[in-house]
Amino acid sequence: MNAYDQLSLALETDAPSRTLPRLLSIANTVDAPILAKWVRLELGGYLASNPAMTEDDVVPEYRAVAGTWRDDFGRMFVLRPDQADLSFVNELRLREGIAELEALATAAGPLSIRHGDFAALLKRNLDIDVSTFEFEPRSVAQVISNVRMHALDSVCEYRDAISAIPVDSSPGPSNEILQLKPGVYGISLDLKALWRRVFKGRG
Image (cartoon, rainbow, N blue to C red):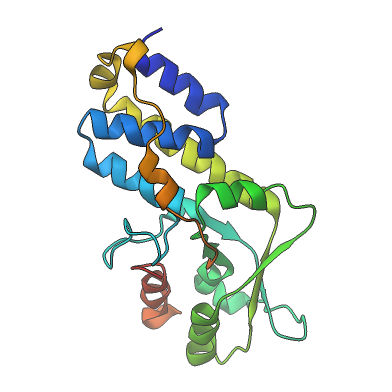
């Protein structure tokens, strides 16, 4: 089994938090800077505290989870039938690093995140007062699955180069990963564009 087969098998079967550090080291070995940056973002999170995150980076769509907004009294925000084009407001793109996502996916009940930026957009553009976004752990499990699929698709582009790495000297986990600390931060008109901007940059 060559290095590519070993890596692919690991990505398919192991938790991404265990396999992505190895993928980062291999990406550096085969000179794949775009892949290496993506791995750093997934490990450290799409956060301002992650040096890999720049003003031009956007939290990927595959990190979106569906849920509901609630106000401080627990009342749910429900779109009217004539607001179908605003359905994207009931999605949130998770910024947390992959290890935190794996922990969230094991939660026993609904998860909630307070996000002032999104709440401010709803208030300013729809005059809706909400403060908390609630979603299910199974949605996080799907995000993790999406990360896994993206990793598998990405390594396919470097199959020949990875296969050429001697198995007995194939790079192990990179020490630099220890420096990336995951954290939690986590319409019509141009509101959808505004919504996208919230996911851009070092949030």
